[in-house]
Length: 242
Image (cartoon, rainbow, N blue to C red):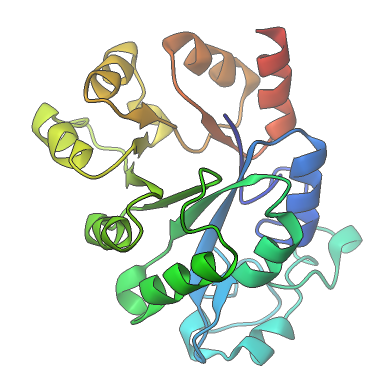
């Protein structure tokens, strides 16, 4: 699977419509999107807890209403070409793209946002995506992933795994396999042995986030099931070559 990391974020400002439309042109199979929640309970797509890095504003996402977030320029930081791009909401993105592409939805910092998981469930249900194979929900927060799976048993879920010199133990893989379809590790964890162990536990593996064509080719040779990449055109080129 060719999964565009925050859209085609190597070429356009991350988590904006510009990056998402470009990812589709580059043959992405899925959009990887980061979900957080505004002060007034709206699901918004932005990676950081604060708005400084990717907008012209400052402060916590959780302390701003949707109206306040929508007033921010989410593209000018990347280049003048994208000035006045806005922070999208999850319903806006579903309304525009749900018939065109799949979604790898990352719940960011769910412990900071009471009610976020239920809001996601209701949003998926309202767009008739609650049983869709277009949807994968992932998080570093394993408890949040488990709760989503309990509420939406037909949705695929995944656990993100940060880099550690200790890797991922067999006991942890077995534990995750009780509820998850995917284990999505930091790219530095990927080895042929790890890919094999994940598959032996009846799960799929999608490393994040990959930036170089040489690494993409290497990972495909190791048997990964997809790649989360800022440059979906490079993944598409590798897919075509294979």
